[in-house]
Image (cartoon, rainbow, N blue to C red; front, top):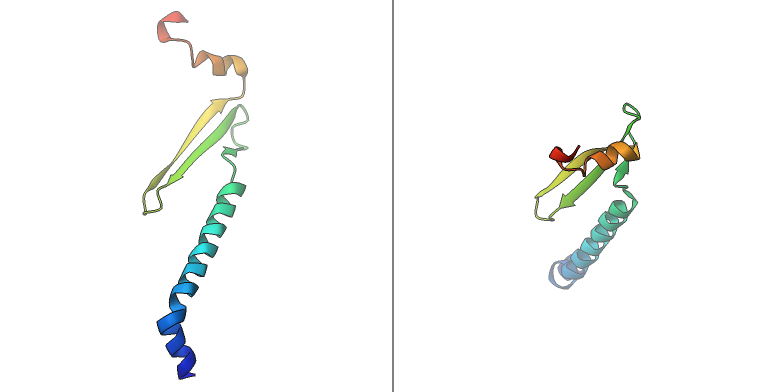
Length: 85
């Protein structure tokens, strides 16, 4: 038993740590791929809700949501300058 413990402490800890980090990165990548940036909210049927999510990996990041009208004409009005309506 002490031989196994000595091996893990001396030679086996780094490979186990590397494998654990690779597995965690793979899980995070899979979850972020399956998450959609397009979220439907049933409470407002006239708008789409878009989400932008950024994580720096060092504890920082931000998440922003936008409500975009489903009506193409109303959406196009956002791009017309204020004095030109």
